[in-house]
Each structure stands twice: as C-alpha cells, then as structure tokens.
Image 1 (cartoon, rainbow, N blue to C red):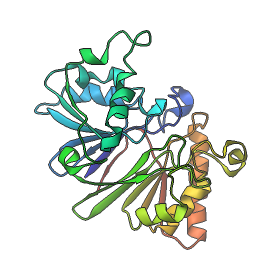
Image 2 (cartoon, rainbow, N blue to C red):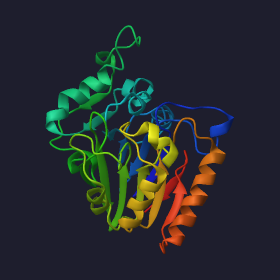
Image 3 (cartoon, rainbow, N blue to C red):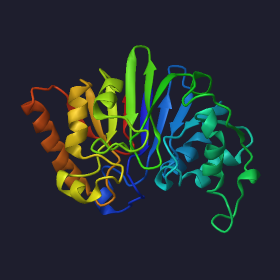
Image 4 (tube, rainbow, N blue to C red):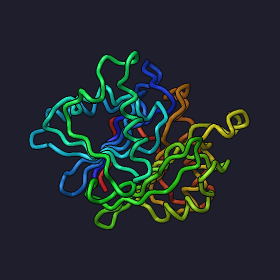
Amino acid sequence: MKIKVWGCRGTLPTPGQNTVRYGGNTTCLEIRNKNNFLTIVDAGSGLRFLGKELVKEKGLEEMCLVLTHSHWDHLMGFPFFLPAYFSRFKINVCGVASAKNYMCQSLARQLEAPYFPVNFEDLKAKFSFGCSRPGCAQCTKISLEPILLSHPNGGFGYKFQETGKTFVLLTDNELGFQHPEGRLPYEYADFARGADLLFHDAQYTDEEYEKTRTWGHSTFNQALKLAIDARVKRFGVFHHDPDRTDDEIDEIIDKLQKQAREKGSDLEVFGVKEGMVIEL
C-alpha cells in the first residue's frame, strides 16, 4: 500500500512561514492498495488539495472516505472537495451502521445555510452510507480493522493491512486519560503490535499536558512509550499542535530519537510531513 499525507496538523489550519516543512493543513491521508484503489482518511483542510488532483486522474470513478470522527478539523475540507461536485464519482463513506445517519449529517451540515452557499443535496457525486462496519472491505478494498479512540465524543483508529504490511493510524487519541468507550494504553499497544508504520497523535509536551489533560490528545512521551511497547518499526508523530513551529517539531523529534536509543530500541521516529509519501 502507498500512503500520502495531505494534512497532519491538529485543531485548525496554520499557514505561514513557521509551518512550511511540516505543513499547516488538517488531517487527510490518501491510501492506495496494490490495485491503486483509493481510500481517503478524514476530510480535514488537506482534502481540498487532494480533490484538485483527483479530478485530473483518468479512470478514477470510485473511492472510499473513512472518517475517524466528526470534530471540525477533520471535516472542514469536505465542502471544497471537487470530486463531490462531479457526477462521475461514487464516494463510499465508511462507518458503523449505527453511525450511518450521524456520518451523513456530519458531512451535510458543512453545506448548510447560512454557513455555505451550496446544499449537500446539490452535490452531483453519488454517495453511499451503507457500510456495515467501519472500514469494510467492500468499500475500501483493503483489510481494515477499527478500534475506539480515547477522545471526547469518541472516534475510531484504524489498522490497514495488505500483502503482509501493516499501517496503524491513531489520531486524536489520549493515552493519559480514558474517555468514555476509550481503551487503555496497553490495548492500543496490542492493536499496533509489530506494525510496519504507526502514526499516533502527539500534540503536547509534558508541561503543556498539565493544562490540557482531558482535551483528547497525547504527549510526545506517552506516544513514544506506546510505539516502543508495541514494537512498531516506524513511528510518525502526528496531529501537530497549531502553535508548534517547524523548528520546535525538529527539536522534539531529535529528543524522541535519543530517548528511543537510550531505551535500547531501534525504533525509527520521525515527524509526519505534509506531502510525505510512504510505500509499504
């Protein structure tokens, strides 16, 4: 599978000279399986740029949109997603059957007066909300296993698997506090066990977390511990704080790499960057 990052910033977009290297767009990932079928994860502001490329792609007619949750920074790009305005596209929105209505509403409410001039009903693409479970293979055409996140209002993390390779995405996941329906840290470590690649929410320093505990995001050290405990091969620091500059992220990544080596781990630690492409 091939993963391309179109947005990895948390909370809200942060354009500017201090976020050029890691990017300022909010969460959006493009995942292609071995047959080039497209699965999109989250509809953050990065979705706008992905959509502009997709309408140019010859032969592309169907795709899957997998949502981790319905907080604004993970949906805000949807009204500007060009394929939604073309009749040649079919967009499968993937999630549990009980969440069918809420997913539809989460997207539709982005296109509602007086907040937006186009109504959801006016979109020309064909939408399907009929999945029986999050990440069903019928829609994604790739093996995908969900896990409930520890986050206010809930959400899902995902494990993608194909041809013996595994990618785990745990964004907006608080390891230091168990939210309703959330799991404990050892359960997330079990879920990510041995993964080739892990993207995990790591938004706060330990000092910042004294004020932000219960907000739904992990510290760098919490996420590093999980990655080491799970024995993943590569750990990508994800969901960057909107106030975090490129230089500050560089410094934090350097510290995490040193900590991993001090703990006797050969874990590769890196900061996820907008535009990054990883093939597994």
